[in-house]
Image (cartoon, rainbow, N blue to C red; front, top):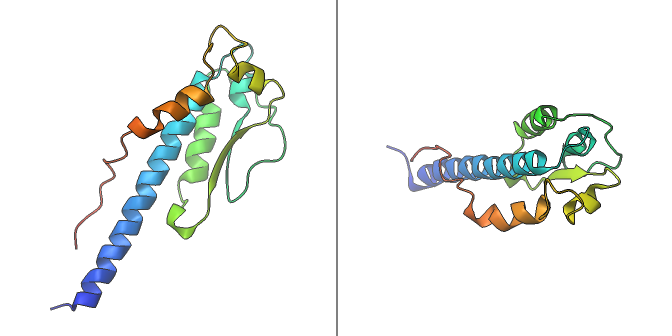
Length: 135
């Protein structure tokens, strides 16, 4: 029979894994919403979304991605092994020069922007279905 300390260690590992999974789910949902809400004329702004772990991107992405699927694939790939409980952050950035104009209603496709709308929804995003296990 295991000791209390062993049971606690198992619980702590399971809790960290569940927190990592919930944080990844939240980042994937927020990132996907940002990407798909970005107005499309040619696809440069939507393709401009970049995901990085540890530090934010410092250069503009010139990807043309009208559907957003390439940006979402990058988001998924960049975060698949990310462990937020290790203290490393995830960054979702868009350095397209006109992205702030789009955020402030320049496009009729997104008159309320992308970021403000998504940020307002963060508290309502369900990350509870993360699986896990007991001790």
